[in-house]
Length: 115
Length: 113
Image (cartoon, rainbow over all chains, first blue to last red; front, side, top):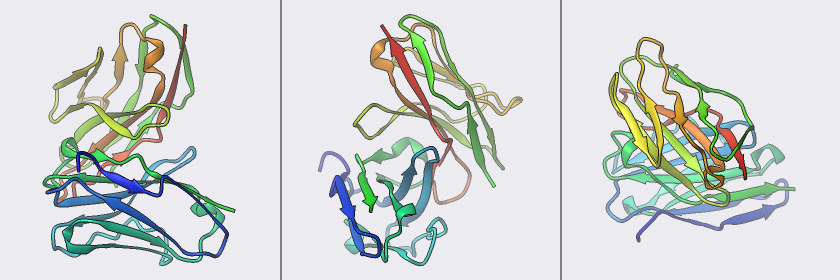
């Protein structure tokens, strides 16, 4: 597509439930990133996929967080047993080569609210 | 590790005022530096960038100069407009292979008519 598409745009879930957030990157972009934007905390790197390489999971805050990227395209970020502190906007970005920021395109994000 | 520190907001200015948003960084190697902007209800957009020392990035009347000696990348605009109201993020990407961006916490700018 023309841009990075994320769904849903808003998600309200009960504490303890699992959620899945989807990112559809720009066609042909080999690199895909997930970030979390919390109020007053800026953007926090979560995970990075580059082609068929093993993902860089160094930013995931706990083992309740996981992500997959199927076929080098669509990615799903899963949060298990959600907690209130997971409430944030989850942003996905893709880039052509993954070697630097200039090629990043961000999606509009998924606003997750855990009640 | 690498980090970015930017001035805390919110910043409230009148239209046509001069804007400076300070940004300093800590990094190993030679990072590339960026300013991203997030308008209300929209996603992050790249505003400008600089990839080496003394480079000046510019776009939409905004400018920032990569100052290696002071490890700074301050954002400036000579005359702000109401439409510039947004959250501004300073960011860097270092020399690692990941290319992931490290962001500051963001500065909210409100411009009043």
